[in-house]
Amino acid sequence: MIRIPQVRVVDEEGAQLGVMPTPQALAMAQERGYDLVEVAPMASPPVVKFLDFGQYKYELTKRDKENKRRQRSVTFKEVRLTPKIGSGDFETKVHRAIEFLEEGDRIKVTVRFRGRELTHPELGRNMLTRFTERIKEHGTPERAPLLEGKSMHLTVASLHKPKEHEAPQRHAKDDQPGEPGEQPTEPADQPAVAPVAAAPAAAAGAGTNGEAAPAKAPAPAPAAAPAPAARPAPAATTAAPARQTEASTEPAPAATGE
Image (tube, rainbow, N blue to C red; front, side):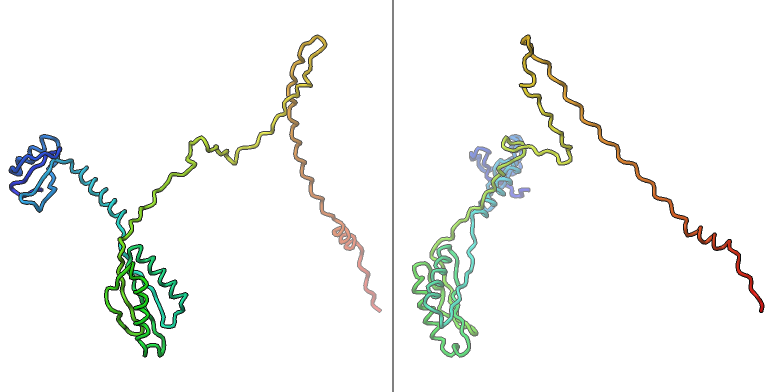
């Protein structure tokens, strides 16, 4: 809600309507079917415009997303050296630092001391000076080398503008359902149908009178053979019980008392 008593009004086509009371400008915007949007609140008097507020917010959001997509934040990279680094490794570090500076990043060059190397800080200072001389066309040191603990570091700012990286656009898939290049897949559980061989043309040759012989109907498929009936289990033998019966019928021998 606009609480300023007077505002400078701009219509929907960008024409200046002058300074008028806020209620009058609001009534005029409602008559034309627009909203009264404050576009320059810091002006004196504030500037308002006849707009569709929903469309206005959508355009602002879209503009902010586009700016965030195009902007690139400057990152901080670090290059580490040692007082006894070889010439080949030193050149590799220099090329790597130049790549960072060309991207628009800031770099921190650090020389680490080990053991008694800390008693000779001038070695690290001379190495940092030689390093900055090699990259002076791409970056400038922000301050003198500083010794902190067992390391001496130097910060270098880039002379190049940060590069804008476009966000990769998402491409649609090549094969979409319903396109001509796609073949429909058949269901896996559909039973296979045995192909029926067509009657050869030679079998249906012409008769003696020149008339074509009628086509033969395909032979019916043979009926499936019935499953064999289960065989009955063999009866248990009764030989052992018979022997026990015969043994029980024999009389026991009488005891003789002598």
